Image (cartoon, rainbow, N blue to C red; front, top):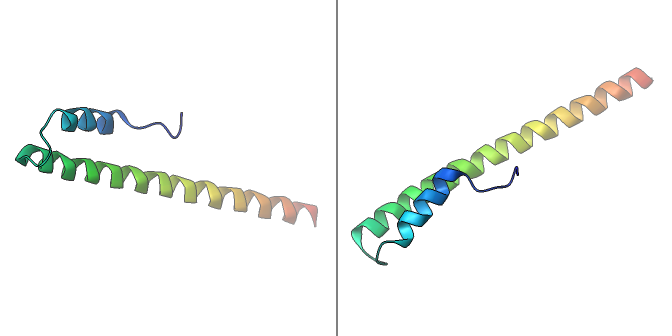
Length: 67
């Protein structure tokens, strides 16, 4: 469920599919979709980095306790 496509991106894709390729609205919605996908990817990256940092911190705490 963590890797599912957000609802806003799906809505934009459905709307984009209704336009004729190359039309003004098609180009507009393509830009909007790209912006949403980019922000979604950045959110995933940040959360992934945070999880990695938390895991490393927990390992260092465990190794310090063991010393």
